[in-house]
Length: 157
Image (cartoon, rainbow, N blue to C red; front, side, top):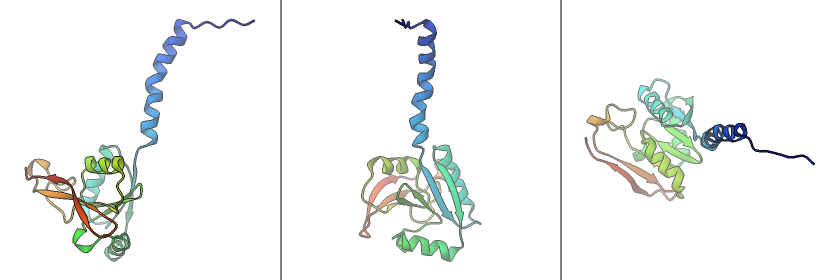
C-alpha cells in the first residue's frame, strides 16, 4: 500500500501555480480584430494602438479607398455612418473611432446587430487627438435592418 502525503512543498507549488492558471482563460479569450484601412491614414494606426493597449490583438489589412468603400457597403454600413476604417471583431463590424469600453460592452452583450460606428472623425475620439479636448460624439449601434440606436454618448470635454 502506498501512502501519499501533502507536504508544504505541494501546498506552496499549488499556491504559486494558481495565479498562472487563472490568467490562461483571459489570455485565451483576448479579442482579435482585423482592421481594414487606407495605408496612408495615420489616425487609423493611432486607433489600433489604443485598441492594443486595451487588450485587443490586431491585424492590419491595407486596401485602396474604392475597395474599402465596397467592403463597408457589402457589410451593410450606410454612407452616413462611415468613417475612415472598419474593423472585424467576433462577427461584428466596428466603424471608425469607437472606444474600447464600448467594444467590450458590445462583445459582452452580443446584440443582434452589424456592429458599432462613430460616424465621421470626431476630434478627441480614440486615435483622434487628446480626449481632454474632445468634441461631443455618439457611438451608434447599427442594426441589421438599417436602423441605428444610441449605444453611448460622449459629451464635449
